[in-house]
Length: 114
Image 1 (cartoon, helix red, strand yellow):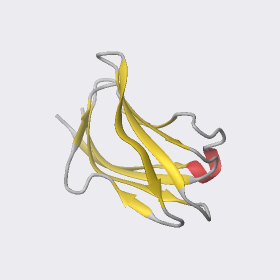
Image 2: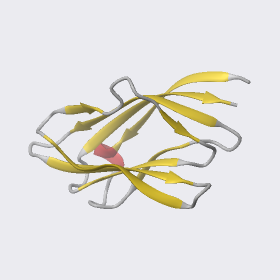
Image 3: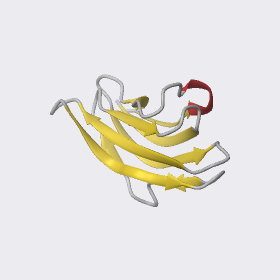
Image 4: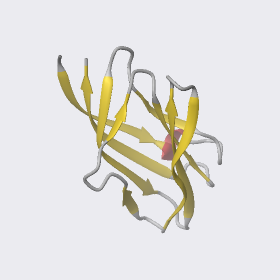
């Protein structure tokens, strides 16, 4: 079993064009288990934003809330994992939405096991 330590980014400041839509920020590759060990969301705007993080479970074909309607202050960053871990199986995804377009960036630190 091979392990790869990775950092994955999503530039919502450039790519998040439609407020309240789900942006897929990471999908675990086929035949891979991913362990999320770090997860931050940064507010890029000059005002408050409300963000939601969801996890899509491909085995169950369902999407569940991980964080719902979290308010981020101007220029602030939220560290979500705080020492915890999240396991994603092959084809599972992390989705983020915000009430404002072009409003957030996110960084994931993870291990992919193949």
